[in-house]
Amino acid sequence: MQTDPGTFSIRRRRLDHEHAVVLIAQVQAEYVRRYGGPDESPIDPLHFEDPHGAFFIGYRGQEPVAMGGWRVHGVPDGVAAATAVEIKRMYVVPDQRGHGYARAVLAHLEETARAAGAEAMVLETGIEQPEAISLYESCEYRPIPAFGFYAGASLSRHYGKVLADCTP
Image (cartoon, rainbow, N blue to C red):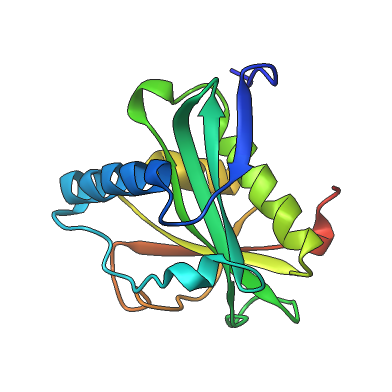
């Protein structure tokens, strides 16, 4: 199902914005349910501020229903680009899934990262999130060698996409 542009909007927010705090708590609870513990990768809120990154909340009307951000990241092995950003905290509330909100947020992240000069996007997700893996693969993200905090974790999967291959 596609998003209705009249009711879904994406707004830039700080990581400590009240809606971000609520959604981050929800995604952490989801990780506990799926993996037995929260995401423990280090997050510095300043990494999501200019010029280091950006964070966004997706709203259905005035209700926060989705989120995602990117932060500057070193270019991992297997990514043919000079600059990269890492996607973090992609999430859609459970009762709003299936409306295209994750795809819309992902496209927005790609557009804003490209506008900020990023040549590639990278991310880490887990095998207990098959819907996330399906989304990323359907949006042309390809497996890359493991990197970052979960590089050695058997439940993790790492993906990358060269943004120059995208059409804005």
